[in-house]
Every structure is written in C-alpha cells, then in structure tokens.
Length: 223
Length: 354
Image (tube, rainbow over all chains, first blue to last red; front, side, top):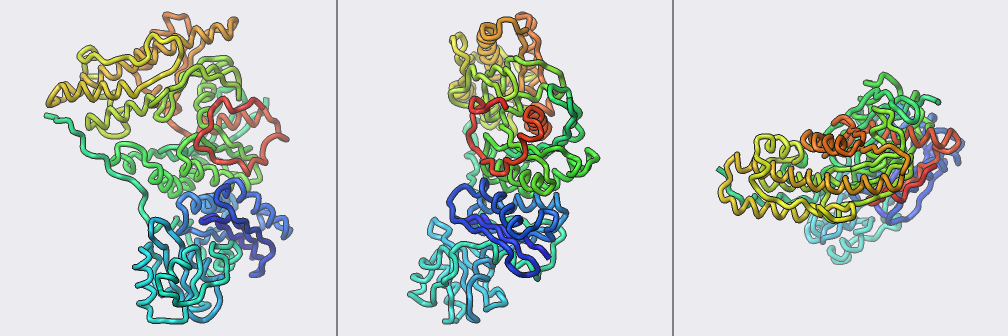
C-alpha cells in the first residue's frame, strides 16, 4: 500500500511516501510562509524518489490541525483535491497525534503547541498506542498545567512548540521530547496505516472560533 | 482553433464556485455547468464578509461543488484539458482553499494548472457569451473592486482609474447595513430604491467633473448617514427615498467617470470602435444598466453587460480566463505552475500577455 503523508499546519512543510509501511521518501522543510508554493513540489519529489506515480497512491494522510488556520487548510485542500482526482480516501490526523507519534517511551506523551495570546493547544496520550488521556483543547497556560497535573502522573514526555511554556508552568516536571516540535509528514503517514478510511474527507480541527465581532446596532430609528 | 474543456474554481470572497466551460479562444463558449454557492447566511449577522468564516465555509463545501460541476457537465476530471483557479487578489484564506484544491485536482489528473487573476476573470468574462473583439473599455464594479480599464488583449490591461477608498459594492453593502436592509446590500438597496424618489435627498456624485477616471465612495457613505440622521425617525418611504437617492448619486458618479474614460479610450485606440463592457457584481443592478445604455446610445458606443450570473463571482469566468490563457500558450507552455503563490494583492497591471 502506498500512503502519501502531508503537513503544513505549523512552521514546516512536509510530504512523505510510505510504501508497504516503510518510509520510501520524505521532504521536511522549516518555513514560516511559502507552504502553498512548495507543497506540490515536495509531493512530486517524494513520488519520483520512490519511483511512484500519483495513480499508484492508495490513500492520503493529512494533518487537520490544530495549527494556523490558513496553514492547516493548505495541505488539507490539496489532499481533498488529490482525493477527488484519484478516487482515494483522505485520512485526517491531528497535529497532536503526529507529535505524540514522534515521541518515545511508555509514559505519558504530552503534545502541546504555543497558540499565542497566552494559550496552549494541548492533548496527552498514553504510550506507544497513543491512547488519549485528555481531549484536544485550547487552554490558558495555567489551565493546561492543571489539566496535566490532574492526570496524577510523573512519567511525562512533553513535545511541541509549547513544551517549554508548559514545563515551566509545571514547575519543571517531565522531560522535553527530542523529536521535532512541529509535525512531520512521515509520522502522519505512519498513523494512517492502520486506520479505517472515512466515507467523507476530514474537516479541519480549529479549537478556536473565527475572529469576528458582531456589528453594533444601527443608531437610526425606524417606524 | 482547438476546442478545450476547462474546470474553473473561484473562492476569493464569499462565493464557493466551480464550473466547466468548453470552447475556443475568443468565444463565445459553452458553459457546461456553473455551480455557485453564496455564503449569505454565514456573513449576514455581521453585515459584511468575515474572512475566516468565508475560508472555513469554502473548505467544507468546495469538493462537493467541484463534484457537482463535473457531474452537471456530464464529464469526468480526466476529460478536462486544464484546471484553472483564482490565485488572487482576494481574501487570502479563501484563495488558498481554491488554489490548493485545484493544484491537487490538476496533479491527480495530470492536466495543466492555470492560476488566474480574479480581475482578469471579470475582464474577459464578456467574451464567454459574446464574441467581443479587443480592445474594449471595461468598467469593473464589485464589492471589492472599482476600476476603469482598457482591455487591449489577454494579459494586456491599462488601468485608467481606480477607487481611492471604498469599492462601489462596498458602498451598497454599507448603505444597506446602515438602513437595516441586510446583506448582501446590492440587491437589497436596488429593490427598495425602486419605490423611492431619487430627487428627495441631495447627495454628492463623488469626483464628478474631475479630469481623471478615479472613484471615491467613502464621502457618499457619510452623506447618506447624515441625511438619514437628519430625517429623524425613518418610515419605509424615507428608506426607499434614501436608497433611490444613493443609487442615483452612484450612477451619476460612475457615468461621469466612464464618460471621461471614453475620451481616453478613443485617444488610445483611434481606429477602434468604442465598446464598453460593464462587469462585476454591481453590473447586475438593472437601474445602472439602464443608465449605461443611455450613455452608450448618446456616445455611439456599443454596450456589453454579461448576464447577472456571470457578473457576480463565479467559476465559469475563471475557467474561461484559463481557456483563453491556455490556448495562447499552447501545450508546452501550461501545466507546471503548481508552485503558483496565493496573492492577497495582485494588480492587473502586473499581468503579462503570454
């Protein structure tokens, strides 16, 4: 089975091709902007690198967030477009799962992103099986520390762009993961190997509402 | 000339749209499908388009809209000769959804991808339904744009004037919001204005008499607000009269600016017949169409206005612009533009003929 993994949800752009469960080719480049320009090039490079064509793909695995709103939609839109054209399923993987899959150890894996504005995106998992211990959430740093303390566990590995922020709020508890603090497509693809294909393509996981203020009522009077 | 079949995708504002067009350069062409989903309900509470809400709605709906465009056209993706999508200018979050979906579709099908400037889509849309030859004068009037342009050919645009503040469609939306008429404002103001007296309120026709071809609608918006406040408690007739007066001021300004552009067009293309094309969402306004008809008759010019469903944002005009570009380039030119960037700003003058 040929699985294409994609991620553009954070400050990296990556694509990976898994052939029968093994990593055949991958690209991972750190970038703040430019994901929309680079992604398709990465895809064709990993396909060529493994001697495969688009039509050889069996499924696409793509991160669905949380991440930057616009960045998350870059790879997911491309994945959905490819899926229509190739008539293959898209499997959505959260950026938390992608981070946790890159960590090691049987203890608690805490995936945490700096969501700015004094908040963290947070989810904790147990061991290699990535059994969720908490739901995906956007929390203040203090509330995030409380959530993790509430697990009553000391065997914590903390990874992601919010790892240092969370660890200091936990008074230094846990160890920082050595894996990439942003998702990598090779882990995204790996996570899709065992999953059931959904009947419809996945939607983004934003964890935050859009910024929009309702307008003030008009000051005019009407009969 | 070769006939081509192009899938076009448009997501730069609040319309999620896909269409299939078949024909050859110069037009007219067959619109095999033209699916448009307008996000009225999503944005109505805000009285205007909220960019992040628009982008979220685009990604939820676009692949179903693309599927519908293909099935209504009765073709499969492998039957198209290219995939075109708006790459800007517009709300960047939405542009990215359409652009990346189209790149995915094109790559999967092994067909050329053609990034299209949204303004070029409007500029060429008239040739989709009528074989209008170059050059022509284009008045582009929509919620985001207000420009007078000499269209000398595909990729050959000379901007004669632009708005220095609000776009004209924006002025309609803001007037509707002020008077509690809902969103989108254009059709709401037009409907109410039909029952109104355009001479009841004296509103300024912005920039009328200036020698350039620029527009301005910010001052008119303020004048409408002041007139509304001075009128006290507003009856339905007062609201109708305000809308009719506002629409008359907009018409007077657009007509005066366009008449200036006629002179510049004639000076630039001495031997060409005077042709005016009015496109963009505001061109769907019937009262404005009538006024432009009078102007063109008085000046001996031919007037072309695309049908309303091709004036508001749609995928057919993007597919058509893709077809005109692709047929210019030939088979070797198109295709490998999967690195095309999304652009929030992208003036027509930066485009080139191929």
